[in-house]
Image 1: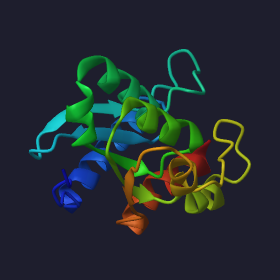
Image 2: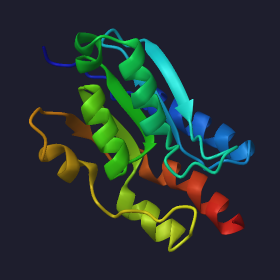
Image 3: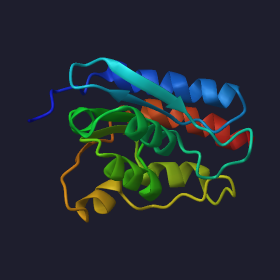
Image 4: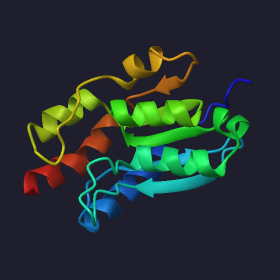
Length: 162
């Protein structure tokens, strides 16, 4: 079943608000939400780097794990993961294995890398999530980057202070 057109900026801006809260709490500025096929927000997740300095605590990876534990495969196939930034290879893989049908993101991985440089807390893989997902056996629709300038602002100020 095709997924509905859920590219409304309000969903991405919600991920930006979650990312800003994560940054305010001292973590990295990343946020993600899972939106069901009916357009309802099923769950949200900020970056989980703190308190344990978990380098795998990316918002999308944690959300995909939680979603795979809570929802049936058919629900996830109709769901969209919205992310403030393009899912890295790990997060794209997690969304794939969870069975999420669609990903929509704000800031591209290559733009993030230009902003963060060689920061030890964010050794960005400049690998588009489409490349990771295209190597799978099932299709995952990817839309993005969208609202990229807005998404980049979260990172410019944050990483400049680190």
